[in-house]
Length: 438
Image (cartoon, rainbow, N blue to C red):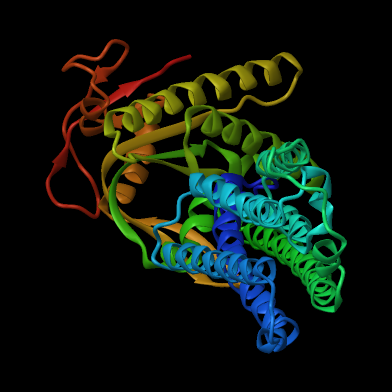
C-alpha cells in the first residue's frame, strides 16, 4: 500500500472553470426567465390598456421599446445558453455578455428619456432602472470579482452619463407624461422586478452553497482516495475520476527497487518502539528523495520500497530522474549509516535495482481498499536486479536499457560494466552495470 499523502494537490483552476461554465449557463437561463417574467407582467398590467380609445403616442412608443428590449434580452439568454450547451463557451465570453446585460438596462432607460423628452435628472422615474440590481446580482453568480467590479463600474458610469443628459429638445416634463410612470402598471412592473431580484439572490445563495459543497466533497474524496493512492494521482483523480484510473494503461516508465540489508536479523533483538522509530526514519528518507526527483512511491513492502517514474512523453527525463533517485538514495542511506555509527548505533546498508521498459499501471480494488499497482516484466526485472546487489558487491545495479534511455554513453562515468545475466522469470539476458556512489 502506498504512503498516505496528507496534502493532495487539487486543480483549483479546473474547479473554478467548471463553476464558471455552470454559472454562465445559469445566468443565460435567468436572462430568459427575467424576459419571460417581465413579459408576463407587461401583458397582465399594460396590455389591458391597449384597448383604450385614445392611447397617447408616448405610451405607444414606450410599449414598443419595452417589448423590443425584452425580446432582445430573451434572445441574448437563448444564444448564450445554446453556446454553453454545445461546448462553445469560453471564459472570455462572460465579459461581452456582462456588457450586454449592462446595455440592456442603460439603453432601456435612455430610450425612455428620449421618448418623454425629459432631462437626465429624471432617470430614476423609469421602471427599467430597477433592472440594475438584477444585473449586479448576475455578477455575483460568476465567482469573478474583477467581472463584478466591471459590471458595477459600467452601471454606475452609465447611469451617471444619463444623469448628465440635457438635450435642447428636452422639455419641462408635463405632469400627465410623468404621471404615466407612477400609475398602476409601472408600479406593478417595479414590484415584479423587485421580486425577480429577490429570486435571483436566492438562486445566487443556493448556487454559492452548491459550489462550496461540491468543492468540499471533491476535496474530501481526493483526500480519502489519496490516503491509499500516491499523491501524484490527485490531479488525475480530479480530471477523470477513479474510473479512469481503474481502466489502467500501458506505458513506458522507470522502475526502482530499494531493500535494506540484514533488517530481519537486526529486528529480532529490538523493541517494537525502536523498530517503529527506525522504519519511520528510513521511509521518511526514501520518501524525501523520491519526491525531490519526481518519483512516485508505488508501495512500501516492509523494509523494501518500489518507486516508479512515469514518462509523460519525456522518456529521457524520466529515465534520468530514476537514475538520479538511485544515486541520491545511495548517498542518503550511506550518510545516515555513518551518522548512526558515530552515535554508537548499527550501520545501515541497502541495495538498489532499476530498469526501464513497458508496464501496465492502474488502480485496483474498491472504495474500501484501493491500490495503485504497476505490473509487468519491467517490474520483475528491476526487483531481480536489486537482489543481485547482494552477490555482486555493489550498492546499485542498473540495466543498460535505463542508462541508454537516460542518455548516458556506452561507458557511463562512475558505472562499471558487469556481465550479461539471465533474470529469473524472463527469457533472454539483461546487460547490467553496477555502481557504489558513497
